[in-house]
Amino acid sequence: MLDQTFSVTFWGVRGGYPKPGPTTIKFGGNTTCLEIRAGPHLIIVDAGTGIIGLGEKLVAQHLATGKPIVAMILFTHTHHDHTHGFPFFTPAYLGSSVLHIFGPKLLHQGLEEVLASAMLPPLYPVRLDEMSSMRVIRNVSENEIITCDAAGGSPQARNVYHEREAHGQGQVKVRIMRSYAHPQGIFIYRIELGGKKLVVATDVEGYAGGDKRLIKFAQGADLLIHDAEYTAEEYLNGSPPKQGWGHSTWEMAVEAAQAAGAKKLALVHHSVHHDDTFMEGMERQAQARFPAAIVAREGLTLDVKA
Image 1 (cartoon, rainbow, N blue to C red):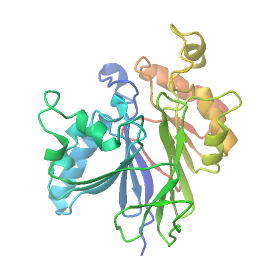
Image 2: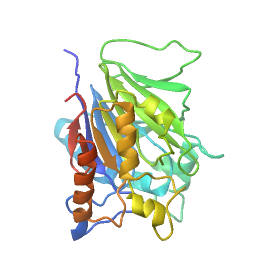
Image 3: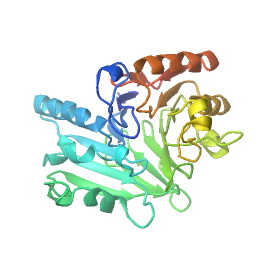
Image 4: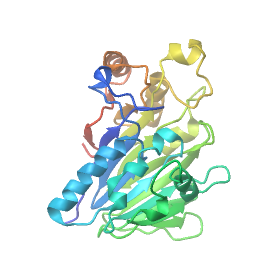
């Protein structure tokens, strides 16, 4: 029987930098990391500090079962709050682990170069090439689709214009949209399984009239995970105003979900200045406009098919 599991667990939901402490206990203080289970495949989106706890859980499972850790890691971009947990991701130090790592080439540095440069002495005691795991690191573009078969085989990247797209029951597909609504640009990912769609759109800023490309890309999504770092007041009248910083208000996220016809909306990339009480209020406001909206919190698991 095919494994049709399709869920997402939030391990890090904060933006900018980690914010631990008594004021963020409910929603969490770790930076961006999502664990997606799609059939037999483990897909990790971004490696903020949330990936550290995920790595500890995966190692515990490995020790209990003896099964090697095999994962696909998708980077939306390479700003610190989306990468600074990677050097502390314990599975990367196990010789039995296999990590397929995909992400954008931004400016003139490839993904592997960026990850390696953050671990060079004297910044870190272990170089990227000294990690014991098997790592396959590849830059991809929005002209490519990443596919994984139902049997749990290795992911394959294909050009959507020049290579035949593979089809098959239980196949996982990852489609890519490059957004320029963030400094240096970012990747938005749409993960598909069994006719269901999960869209991850962190670090995006809304446009007047809505981001038409994102709305089309997320059309009919079963779950849209969308940046919502600011309130409208912070965005327009903050000190300084936040226009052009590459992040959205919760209102922009709601408008995108409504325009795309998304079934559920999860708000992410919480400001370090918003404590648990503030986030609870934001959730109430968002739900008044879009009842299927939630503010994502660490440890929350959502079934994409539900």
